[in-house]
Length: 121
Image 1 (cartoon, helix red, strand yellow):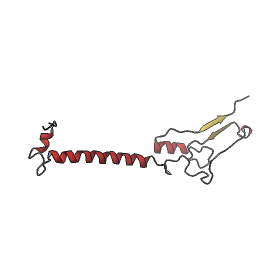
Image 2 (image 1 turned 180 degrees about the horizontal axis):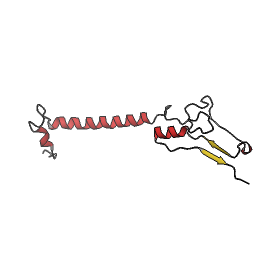
Image 3 (image 1 turned 90 degrees about the vertical axis):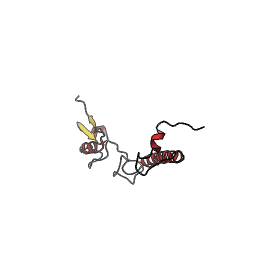
Image 4 (image 1 turned 180 degrees about the vertical axis):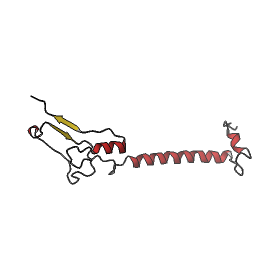
């Protein structure tokens, strides 16, 4: 008893693609191999794209020899207003120099500075 696969007869018709004829046995072999190859390629690509590299790191240059980058400031030393960098690209880090604008344009991100103002007493 043979099963009917819709559209299969079109693949085996002579003249569909000149010099190309696909039998049912070959189709049964080719389809699972092609599906396995596609799934394998997808999984390998997902695995390697998930690996952390220098491109995926937030901090690419600041105090790389330190296990954790920490900055502390006294509120009395701030003045009336200060802007702190949150994109890690500022040449004046930890202060903002506007480098986030270029970072946002290149990556589609929307990061901006942390701005702290003193209230007028």
